[in-house]
Amino acid sequence: MNGNTAVEKKVVASVDGKPIVLETDRIRVKERIGLPGGIAFIMGAVIGSGIFISPKGALQNSGSVGMSLIIWTMCGVLSMIIGLVYAELGVLLPKSGGDYTIIKSGIGGVPAFLVSWIQCIVTNSGSRTVLALVFADYVCAPIFGKCEAPNSIRKSIAAVELLILAITNTISVRLVSSMQGFFTVLKVLALIIITVGGFVYLFQGKTENFNDSFQGTTNDITSISLAIYSCMWAYGGYTNLNEIAEELIQPRKNIPKAIIISMTLITIIYITTNVSYFIMLSKSEFLTVPAVAFTWGERVLGSAAIIIPISVMCSVHGASNGGFFTDVRVRFAAARAGHLPEVLSFLHHKSRIPLASLFLNTVMSIIMLIPGDIGELINLVGFVGFLTQGLAVIAFLRIRYLRRNEKRNKDHFRIPLVIPFLALAICAFMLISPFISNPKIEFLYGAGFILSGLLLYIPFVYFDWRVPGCDQTTTMLQLLMDICPTVLDQDIDPLMNDNL
Image (cartoon, rainbow, N blue to C red):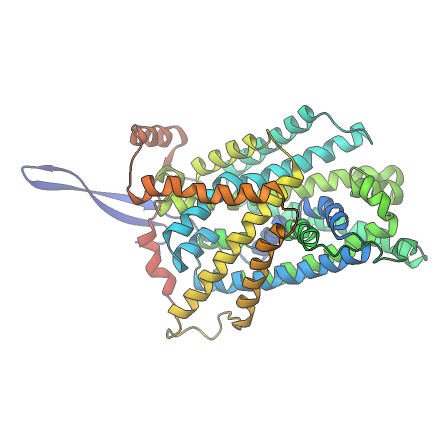
């Protein structure tokens, strides 16, 4: 086996009792993304719609400006704690698939299948749908002003955005990576403009919006948890690099570095941006305006405020671009392990992109535009995300225990055990707290979607039932998309223990 292919021997027929063995080349993904690309992917995935829509939800649920800022800071710390667990997981399991691969390796096939199932129908698609809707809202903001844009127009723009992203991701990994870096620079510059613009007014003495900043703070646990969900949505994406580990150069070194550098910068950017928002907007204005960043731009930039919605669109597009890239790698990994149809793991023979997975992701995202409520989608995606991350932390603890006697390279990243236990406590709290008082229906939907995966696992994975016509459909898709099988899990698993 060389760097990109593996020979597979398969018995396809027999003549006079003698088997006919066919040797086929399976291809594997290439290592072509370095540390700068990894940092760009995390910052590009994390800084998207969240910093432009989550501040309103955080303030509304926390009840006060001061508590909102505390929650933003706390969520940055929480994200760093969980991110450090994923950083070491990148060292232990430098293999594509993210949470799916982690849970499958550490806990087993059933929870891994449920994760792949819920990510397939809810988490990944829902995240892309939210971003597309926010993109559409900021396209409409300069056109419709304070009036609400018609839902049909919003959703049509969002659908076009999803199709553009899908087409971009079919061209090449290099193009996606380059675009990610470009849009990351643009969105960071936009947030620096917001931060500097607000702080200029702060230094001039505009501090009245911070008077009695803790007035109205809620003591309801469910409300606090919903504020955390809003903020954690803005911080989401720091696990994306684990989903493309096989395409990273030196993943055991670069994944930890990329997560630590990126999350530190993002936390600083988010806190300063929120302070800038509150400098220019009172609490009541903050809760009533349709687009916080656009209203801020009108106050500070005047006629140049148009650059804010353009910057938001670039930010959201960049986050969606990176999200599309990593989402399909989860389906790719699950299909390669036999938990989803095998065709979802097939790669285009030139670009090495899993086109069938990309097609499915696009279709599911467009379908989720039909209900299309941003707040409910954020809560649903956040709830499932904390459950998935909790399982990933448990998998991490088990992997560390199973490998306790193995020698590891002293240069490889390693965290103290108190961090994963703290991360597990965080995930447990975020799963329980929404149900303490006045639970939202979307959290019940999330639990139901996860359990419904068992209805598919038992017949199609455990008993290996095959849908009639499946092979013919696979062949048709291969010819239509010009895709071919990839390296199997058993070809890669022995490589994961090298140099530990």
